[in-house]
Amino acid sequence: MHQPLGYRDRNHPDYVCLLRKSLYGLKQAPRAWYKRFADYVFSIGFVNSICDTSLFIFHKGSAVAYILLYVDDIILTASSDALRCSIMDLLSSEFAMKDLGPLNYFLGITVTRNKSGMFLSQHQYAKEIISRAGMTSCKPAKTPVDTKSKVSATSGSPFDDPTLYRSLAGALQYLTFTRPDISYVVQQVCLHMHDPRIDHMSALKRIIRYVQGTLDYGLHLYSSPTSTLVSYTDADWGGCPDTRRSTSGYCVFLGDNLISWSSKRQPALSRSSAEAEYRGVANVVSESCWIRNVLLELQCPVHKATLVYCDNVSAIYLSRNPVQHQRTKHVEMDIHFVREKVAHGQVRVLHVPSRYQIADIFTKGLPLILFEDFRDSLSVQKPPASTVGVC
Image (cartoon, rainbow, N blue to C red):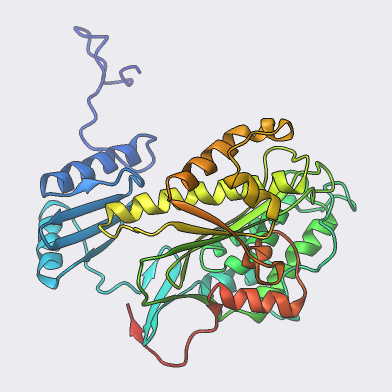
């Protein structure tokens, strides 16, 4: 750093300006704002979550409050209206803030309340994606992907507008926040952002046609006890036609509510279907451990073991068998990690028939009837007719 022209001090040429207030555009601005906000909420009794640095927790006796911070957008919830109002008054006295009332719109996600719980939707955002693609009058598709093999990275000729492809693929990634039913196919089109082909663009357009026909769909959250954590995991062994890597997917339910899901190509090649499935088990066990820690910080501990459902019998045996075999030495870390959780009673790995393996929707294209069945199991549905207001 150097003194700017016109403001140079001849007596102290090595001095630099002291930044008293961070401004938008500076690289250090987000960090400075976060520190400023965090220091103040610490002074009024909040503590920072270990699992998520954007979460602040207040707990004093029976009084509980949570603050979720995203840049300068804040969600505040408390165990009583009096506590919520007192925290809002304290924050308003320190920062220039505006109370927008009950939560109804946050980061592009619309929140509505109904008799059974809440409904999360990105209806307007989805319409903007369709408009950006120039497909407002397109014919809707019933599924986001066909049941054929995955598209190769070199199939077809290069697409003439890779910038448009990347823009649409990135926008669809954000749409998966409330639409887990398109997670798998969005993950597939995002694999080819570096060199999109015409076949890849055709797959992307099919996603948009499916979104066009399901614009009103969103994620339902129901009022249910938080005493059970249930997860499903699956893997499509060697499904990538270029690298022969497997695609693993999982979904985690807290009570009746879907709270976490993933569809991702595995970073390493698996030599057997059991190995691919077991890596998927290790991934969902890791996610479940993180969720249990978050719930513990939120004063909502889960005392029962996490149930992990897998349709591969060999992977289930690996999680219980204490004997190491020659053919499983290369996945030893994953085996020890899962086995330790099983031995401590924190996880139970159980078998589920493939017909009821919900995680299939995150690893491959499915027939229409099976796809709709699994989509309903994920609580991705139309908004209920009895919507009564905002949350």
